[in-house]
Length: 237
Image 1 (tube, one colour):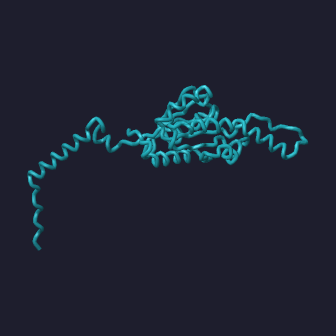
Image 2 (image 1 turned 30 degrees about the horizontal axis):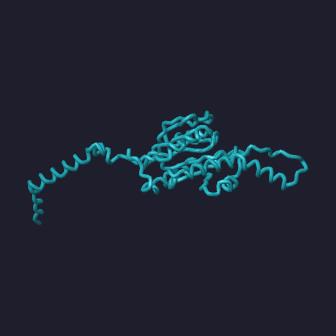
Image 3 (image 1 turned 90 degrees about the horizontal axis):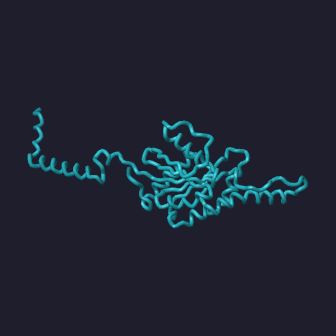
Protein backbone atom coordinates (compact mmCIF):
# COMPACT_ATOMS: atom_id res chain seq x y z
CA UNK A 1 0.00 0.00 0.00
CA UNK A 2 1.43 3.36 -1.03
CA UNK A 3 2.28 5.87 1.73
CA UNK A 4 0.13 9.00 1.99
CA UNK A 5 1.60 12.00 0.19
CA UNK A 6 3.19 14.68 2.39
CA UNK A 7 1.04 17.75 3.15
CA UNK A 8 1.38 20.66 0.80
CA UNK A 9 3.69 23.40 2.12
CA UNK A 10 2.08 26.58 3.40
CA UNK A 11 2.52 29.36 0.88
CA UNK A 12 5.23 31.80 1.91
CA UNK A 13 2.96 34.83 1.55
CA UNK A 14 0.23 33.23 3.66
CA UNK A 15 2.77 32.48 6.39
CA UNK A 16 4.01 36.05 6.29
CA UNK A 17 0.47 37.38 6.58
CA UNK A 18 -0.14 35.15 9.59
CA UNK A 19 2.97 36.48 11.28
CA UNK A 20 1.97 40.06 10.56
CA UNK A 21 -1.51 39.45 11.97
CA UNK A 22 -0.03 37.86 15.10
CA UNK A 23 2.39 40.74 15.55
CA UNK A 24 -0.43 43.28 15.31
CA UNK A 25 -2.53 41.31 17.76
CA UNK A 26 0.34 41.20 20.24
CA UNK A 27 0.85 44.95 19.87
CA UNK A 28 -2.81 45.57 20.59
CA UNK A 29 -2.65 43.36 23.67
CA UNK A 30 0.40 45.21 24.96
CA UNK A 31 -1.22 48.62 24.99
CA UNK A 32 -1.18 50.49 28.34
CA UNK A 33 -4.91 49.89 28.69
CA UNK A 34 -4.38 46.15 29.11
CA UNK A 35 -0.82 45.91 30.39
CA UNK A 36 0.34 42.97 28.26
CA UNK A 37 -0.82 39.57 27.01
CA UNK A 38 -0.18 37.73 30.26
CA UNK A 39 -2.13 40.27 32.26
CA UNK A 40 -5.09 40.00 29.88
CA UNK A 41 -5.32 36.28 30.60
CA UNK A 42 -4.85 36.51 34.38
CA UNK A 43 -6.78 39.63 35.40
CA UNK A 44 -9.75 39.22 37.72
CA UNK A 45 -12.61 41.54 38.58
CA UNK A 46 -12.34 43.35 41.90
CA UNK A 47 -15.46 44.25 43.85
CA UNK A 48 -15.64 46.55 46.88
CA UNK A 49 -17.77 45.60 49.90
CA UNK A 50 -18.44 47.89 52.86
CA UNK A 51 -19.24 46.61 56.35
CA UNK A 52 -21.70 48.88 58.14
CA UNK A 53 -23.56 48.73 61.44
CA UNK A 54 -23.77 50.34 64.84
CA UNK A 55 -20.76 50.53 67.10
CA UNK A 56 -19.85 47.23 68.79
CA UNK A 57 -21.92 45.21 66.30
CA UNK A 58 -19.00 42.89 65.48
CA UNK A 59 -17.95 44.29 62.09
CA UNK A 60 -14.21 44.02 62.76
CA UNK A 61 -14.55 40.50 64.19
CA UNK A 62 -16.48 39.43 61.09
CA UNK A 63 -13.81 41.07 58.94
CA UNK A 64 -11.08 39.14 60.77
CA UNK A 65 -12.96 35.87 60.30
CA UNK A 66 -13.29 36.47 56.56
CA UNK A 67 -9.56 37.15 56.22
CA UNK A 68 -8.64 34.05 58.23
CA UNK A 69 -11.00 31.87 56.19
CA UNK A 70 -10.02 32.99 52.69
CA UNK A 71 -6.41 34.13 53.10
CA UNK A 72 -4.36 31.04 54.13
CA UNK A 73 -1.39 33.11 55.30
CA UNK A 74 -3.54 35.25 57.60
CA UNK A 75 -3.24 34.46 61.34
CA UNK A 76 -6.17 33.29 63.42
CA UNK A 77 -8.86 35.96 63.81
CA UNK A 78 -8.57 38.28 66.77
CA UNK A 79 -11.35 37.53 69.21
CA UNK A 80 -10.89 40.83 71.03
CA UNK A 81 -10.90 43.97 68.94
CA UNK A 82 -10.98 47.69 69.63
CA UNK A 83 -13.55 50.08 68.14
CA UNK A 84 -12.66 51.04 64.59
CA UNK A 85 -11.72 54.68 64.22
CA UNK A 86 -11.79 55.37 60.51
CA UNK A 87 -11.50 52.14 58.51
CA UNK A 88 -9.85 48.74 58.20
CA UNK A 89 -9.22 47.55 54.66
CA UNK A 90 -8.22 44.18 53.22
CA UNK A 91 -8.45 42.29 49.92
CA UNK A 92 -9.64 38.68 49.84
CA UNK A 93 -8.75 36.46 46.89
CA UNK A 94 -11.51 34.19 45.58
CA UNK A 95 -11.23 31.79 42.61
CA UNK A 96 -12.94 34.18 40.21
CA UNK A 97 -12.61 37.61 41.80
CA UNK A 98 -11.08 39.84 44.45
CA UNK A 99 -13.20 41.25 47.26
CA UNK A 100 -11.92 44.49 48.75
CA UNK A 101 -13.50 44.80 52.18
CA UNK A 102 -13.93 48.15 53.90
CA UNK A 103 -14.66 47.86 57.63
CA UNK A 104 -15.97 51.30 58.59
CA UNK A 105 -16.39 52.65 62.12
CA UNK A 106 -19.96 52.59 63.45
CA UNK A 107 -19.84 55.30 66.10
CA UNK A 108 -22.41 58.02 65.65
CA UNK A 109 -19.73 60.61 64.91
CA UNK A 110 -18.38 58.45 62.05
CA UNK A 111 -21.64 57.46 60.35
CA UNK A 112 -21.75 60.66 58.32
CA UNK A 113 -18.59 59.42 56.57
CA UNK A 114 -20.30 56.27 55.29
CA UNK A 115 -21.77 58.07 52.29
CA UNK A 116 -18.30 58.67 50.86
CA UNK A 117 -18.06 54.90 50.20
CA UNK A 118 -21.44 54.39 48.53
CA UNK A 119 -20.63 55.42 44.96
CA UNK A 120 -17.75 52.96 44.58
CA UNK A 121 -19.11 49.98 46.54
CA UNK A 122 -20.59 46.87 44.92
CA UNK A 123 -22.30 45.44 48.03
CA UNK A 124 -23.19 46.44 51.58
CA UNK A 125 -23.09 44.11 54.59
CA UNK A 126 -25.02 45.57 57.53
CA UNK A 127 -24.24 43.81 60.81
CA UNK A 128 -26.60 43.79 63.79
CA UNK A 129 -25.49 42.75 67.26
CA UNK A 130 -28.32 40.45 68.30
CA UNK A 131 -27.29 40.69 71.97
CA UNK A 132 -27.30 44.50 72.10
CA UNK A 133 -30.54 45.75 70.63
CA UNK A 134 -32.18 47.22 73.72
CA UNK A 135 -31.37 49.27 76.77
CA UNK A 136 -34.45 48.57 78.87
CA UNK A 137 -34.86 46.49 82.00
CA UNK A 138 -36.39 43.04 81.83
CA UNK A 139 -36.62 42.78 85.61
CA UNK A 140 -39.94 43.59 87.23
CA UNK A 141 -42.15 42.68 90.12
CA UNK A 142 -42.56 39.02 90.93
CA UNK A 143 -46.33 39.30 90.64
CA UNK A 144 -46.30 40.78 87.11
CA UNK A 145 -48.54 38.89 84.74
CA UNK A 146 -47.47 37.50 81.37
CA UNK A 147 -48.78 40.55 79.49
CA UNK A 148 -46.68 42.93 81.58
CA UNK A 149 -43.57 40.82 81.09
CA UNK A 150 -44.16 40.67 77.33
CA UNK A 151 -44.70 44.42 77.10
CA UNK A 152 -41.49 45.06 79.02
CA UNK A 153 -39.60 42.75 76.68
CA UNK A 154 -40.98 44.59 73.66
CA UNK A 155 -39.79 47.94 75.04
CA UNK A 156 -36.33 46.49 75.63
CA UNK A 157 -36.03 44.97 72.18
CA UNK A 158 -37.28 48.10 70.42
CA UNK A 159 -34.53 50.33 71.89
CA UNK A 160 -31.29 49.49 70.09
CA UNK A 161 -33.13 47.79 67.25
CA UNK A 162 -35.01 50.99 66.53
CA UNK A 163 -31.67 52.77 66.19
CA UNK A 164 -30.56 50.05 63.76
CA UNK A 165 -33.70 50.53 61.72
CA UNK A 166 -33.27 54.30 61.50
CA UNK A 167 -29.61 54.03 60.55
CA UNK A 168 -30.37 51.40 57.92
CA UNK A 169 -33.17 53.52 56.47
CA UNK A 170 -30.74 56.41 56.17
CA UNK A 171 -28.36 54.17 54.22
CA UNK A 172 -31.09 52.93 51.88
CA UNK A 173 -32.49 56.40 51.24
CA UNK A 174 -29.19 57.60 49.80
CA UNK A 175 -29.51 57.62 46.00
CA UNK A 176 -26.01 56.15 45.59
CA UNK A 177 -27.03 52.90 47.32
CA UNK A 178 -29.93 52.28 44.95
CA UNK A 179 -29.56 48.87 43.33
CA UNK A 180 -26.61 47.87 45.54
CA UNK A 181 -26.97 44.34 47.00
CA UNK A 182 -27.58 44.47 50.76
CA UNK A 183 -26.96 41.65 53.24
CA UNK A 184 -27.98 41.94 56.90
CA UNK A 185 -26.24 39.66 59.38
CA UNK A 186 -27.61 38.97 62.86
CA UNK A 187 -24.28 38.61 64.65
CA UNK A 188 -23.48 36.76 67.90
CA UNK A 189 -26.27 34.20 67.51
CA UNK A 190 -24.10 31.71 69.41
CA UNK A 191 -24.69 33.53 72.71
CA UNK A 192 -27.46 32.59 75.10
CA UNK A 193 -28.54 36.20 75.57
CA UNK A 194 -29.14 36.82 71.87
CA UNK A 195 -32.51 37.74 70.43
CA UNK A 196 -34.00 35.38 67.85
CA UNK A 197 -33.42 36.25 64.22
CA UNK A 198 -37.17 36.37 63.62
CA UNK A 199 -37.51 39.16 66.21
CA UNK A 200 -34.78 41.16 64.51
CA UNK A 201 -36.38 40.57 61.14
CA UNK A 202 -39.67 41.94 62.44
CA UNK A 203 -37.89 45.16 63.34
CA UNK A 204 -36.25 45.41 59.92
CA UNK A 205 -39.24 44.47 57.83
CA UNK A 206 -37.99 45.90 54.54
CA UNK A 207 -34.57 44.24 54.61
CA UNK A 208 -33.22 40.87 53.51
CA UNK A 209 -31.77 39.08 56.51
CA UNK A 210 -29.71 35.95 57.00
CA UNK A 211 -28.31 34.26 60.05
CA UNK A 212 -25.82 32.07 58.21
CA UNK A 213 -22.09 31.86 58.84
CA UNK A 214 -19.09 33.65 57.42
CA UNK A 215 -18.58 31.47 54.36
CA UNK A 216 -22.26 31.60 53.48
CA UNK A 217 -22.20 35.39 53.81
CA UNK A 218 -19.22 35.70 51.45
CA UNK A 219 -20.84 33.29 48.98
CA UNK A 220 -23.99 35.40 49.02
CA UNK A 221 -22.05 38.59 48.34
CA UNK A 222 -20.01 36.88 45.64
CA UNK A 223 -23.08 35.72 43.73
CA UNK A 224 -24.90 39.06 44.03
CA UNK A 225 -22.05 41.28 42.84
CA UNK A 226 -21.59 39.02 39.80
CA UNK A 227 -25.31 39.17 39.07
CA UNK A 228 -25.27 42.97 39.45
CA UNK A 229 -22.08 43.63 37.46
CA UNK A 230 -23.91 45.29 34.57
CA UNK A 231 -25.25 47.93 36.93
CA UNK A 232 -22.05 48.22 38.98
CA UNK A 233 -19.10 47.06 36.87
CA UNK A 234 -16.06 45.75 38.75
CA UNK A 235 -12.55 47.12 38.51
CA UNK A 236 -10.31 44.80 36.52
CA UNK A 237 -7.06 43.97 38.27
